[in-house]
Every structure is written in structure tokens, then in C-alpha cells.
Image 1: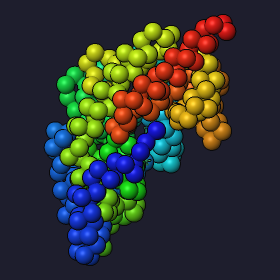
Image 2: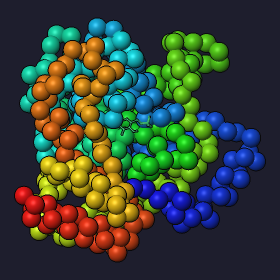
Image 3: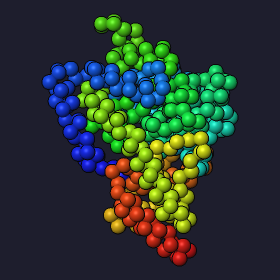
Image 4: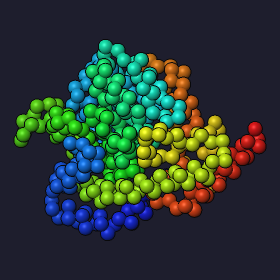
Length: 368
Ligand SMILES: Cc1ncc(COP(=O)(O)O)c(C=O)c1O
């Protein structure tokens, strides 16, 4: 599903001198590479501010703190996401209010968002799942109409576009993850907050260093959430390849679409106004587990993102949701399967994966 070793070997000549430079410099946390990475990501996203933090999870948590999400507040989000999206809401004492997804894009359904708004709602928190923007333009109209914050979890979507705008353009703030397997990943954890709101940026900068305001004066109860120089140096090199690697992923997606066209699999649906960066290429099949086993037996890795929606997870039972509450998310959890798409794959590998899937689909139809 990822081949980070071979990715590293391709960029080793550029990365290694920087690693030595950082080690020699003695400045290991929040130095010039972090500052430069912040500027480069801000430029990529046409945003005024970018603030590096420890992880995508912290990017979300510090952003929600910066907009003063408090106990009793409600934040509307999707149950079909990585756990961090809802976890941070709970950690701040607020309540995640889930709404169902669109069954084709797997992103939050804006109509249902509007119906879930109550006097306690403070924010909408959509996720750009698998590398495709959520319906951010429509969500921003809703957020503005009701006076809500719109925070975009773009952990999986660096480089994506929506109505020809980069991620974050329609939100009050967007968050990125640099977990190693993300489209641009470090050699450890990292994350970033992108915003045009200078107060959000100022507060996140303070919260990442314990709420500090100047040397050892504290305006907030904060966190240890600094990005380090080694990660930033590696990420700066990888950022130069973002466009090339994204185009490679998109090319692989196009190959899969051609090679799998004759099967009855549901292939990823891309909204016409979206530029999808294919963090994942996620297909759908009613016999998903059998397909996964079939691939595995032939040496092909695949993954299920995510096997159980958050409202049905043991840790989230206290929210009181029952099975059947979000049928599209629940069905997707049973049927989705992500297959290898990363930029290091070869055309032969894509062809092999497609052949095996075709063989499964034909055998399956024959049995039916
Ligand atoms: C949608 C989503 N949100 C948040 C995160 C959290 O990012 P991190 O693992 O960097 O904390 C991830 C990735 O892991 C993610 O996929």
C-alpha cells in the first residue's frame, strides 16, 4: 500500500545533506526549516498562514481550541473517517454530532449537515476522504448562514482542489497530517494548520508551545506540539515532488479505471468540480472480504478504511447512536476496499492487480 523505502532512495541525495545540516546546526525543534515549510505550504494553499504542529490530530485539536470549542458545544462531522476527527472533539469536552455520508464520494452530505444544526452547534468539521475535497463551497454557505465555524480535515488531501481552489480555501481553517504514509509524509509524525484568520494562526502558534505568549508568559493552557527540523527538512524535499507524485497517483487511477471498466465493481466517483489526489483508490464490492482474501492469497496488499464507522465503535457508544443511524456509512464500511495507488508503483503492478480483481469479479459472477 506504500513503498516508503523506495521513495526515500529516489530522494536520498537531496535529503541526506539536509539531515546532516540540521544535526550540525544544533537547532532541532521549530527552526528555519519549519518556518520555510510553513511558508511553502501556505503558498501551495494560497493561504496567509500555516502553522506546523506535531501531528494531524494535534492540528485539529489546536484549531478547535483556537476557535474556543468548549464543553457542551456540538461539532457536526462524519462517522466515516479516521478516529482523530471525532476524538479531538470529545477530548475538548464537546459533542461530535454525526451525519451520514454521500454513498458515492463517501464525504459528508451537506443536506444532512443542515438538518443536524441546533442552537448548540458551533462548528462543522468535514473530512476530504481518500484525497477528494468534501462539498466545501456548499458547506461554507451553510456555515455562514448559521454563523458556524467551518474547519476542514484535509489530512488525506494535500494538493487537492475544489472549484479550482486549493484545500482550505472555503474553510476558516484546514488541517494536514504528515504521517509517513500520507501523500507527503515525514519520517515520523507531523501536521499543519492552514488559515487566513490571523487570530486562529496566532492562537495555534501559542498553543503548540504550552500557550506561551513571549518568554515564559502563558496566555492559555497549551500543549507540547512542535514540529521538528528533521521532519520539516524531509517534508520540504518531498513537497517539491508533490505535483509529480500526485499526477502519478492520478495516472494510476486512470489506468485502474480503464482496466477495471468491464467489471461490476463500484470505482471511485469524483465530483466534476474536484481534483482528486487519490490518497486512496477505493473500490467497492458486496463481497469485499472475499475479494480482499483473494488479493492477499496472490500477494496483493489492500486495506479497509474504515471497517466500523465511529458511531458504532465501543469507545463512542456513550454518544448513544445505534446501528442503522447512518446507513450509507455503515454499508460503505462493509464494502469498501482500498487497493495500491502510490506513486512508486509500476504499470505492470497496476495491470497485475487489475487482472486479479477481474478474475475475482468474473469468478464471483459465475458463482452467483
Ligand atoms: C482524516 C484524518 N484525520 C486526521 C488524521 C490524523 O493525523 P495524524 O495521524 O497525523 O495525527 C488522519 C491520519 O492519520 C486522517 O486520515
